[in-house]
Amino acid sequence: MVMYRDPFNSSMLQYMSMMWLFHHWGQVDHRRFDEARVRDLERQVAEMKAKGMQPDPTYAEPGVDPDLVYRRDVLEQPEGSHWGMWFLGFLAVCGAGFALVFVFTKRSQEGRRPQIVRPQEEDGLYNPLRLHTGDFVSFKTLDLAGRNWSVTQVSEYQRLAGDETFPMINYELQDEDRRMILRAVPGAEALPDLLVLKVFDEMGFNEDVVEAVKSNEFYVDEDDGTRTTYSALSDCGEEGWSVRTKAMSGRGQPAKEGECRYWDYYRKGDVSRGEMAEDVFFFVEIDQATGWTRMLEGSRITSGDVETFPA
Image 1 (cartoon, rainbow, N blue to C red):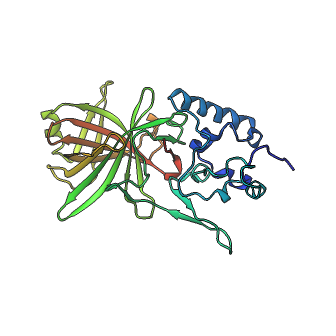
Image 2 (image 1 turned 120 degrees about the horizontal axis):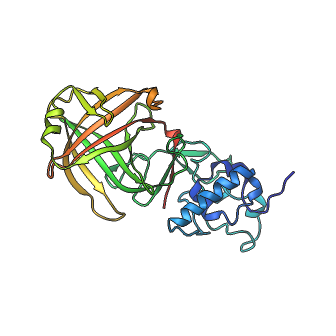
Image 3 (image 1 turned 180 degrees about the vertical axis):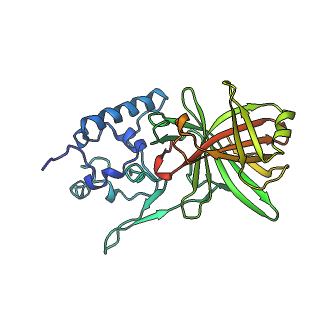
């Protein structure tokens, strides 16, 4: 039997988030991982330090009982003799691969059971992933893996349809040289439906685009002379969907409210382009105050392909 030189509960290690491991990497016995995993973790720790983050050995995840993190013999030691049992730690997302927040309650006399909490709204915003500016996101999909994405803005969209409103949220992401948007919309189940979108193009007010979105098909002429055709996804009409927006660019800062209209399209994925998704979605958004126009293209992604790290 291997005895590890750290105070942590081995059965819970599979649930440790990357953020928790970053802050406690100096305490965790690296023999717990194989060589390939250690190299990968050290690379991620180095990348997070390069972004200006500093390890905090007192880092704790709110609402987590330390009984679930530390070994029983550590917990039973006299006060002051164990390894910092006064701080908490771990977010149960990494091993399971789901973008859920697991809050573990204190154990009762009969035993311990984890309670799953799925936040839907926070500070008045639909925010199912509970991400804020400055937080980090990583993906497990091949084309996005290996990068640490920073959340630069959180924008809620409230689509208006008659007397009803339908929320969705954009998490604007940035790494060293790429911009992406992780969009979450309420799903049929408890988990949200997720889209990963790239900024296909953006520009000031453009009459040609305004005319183009009036059609049930949207055309994009490629540099090689070919034309890509997207078909209307919903029956939003020539006027598109009317949306109220709230954009948060910093913690504690007031939301910037606005209005925009958007049109949604789709096409089938093209294997010859290396696209593995069944459907590729295309959105045209026009800000009603400034006329700023943005086009987004992307596909669905599962919650299991997304991992979130609070700053």
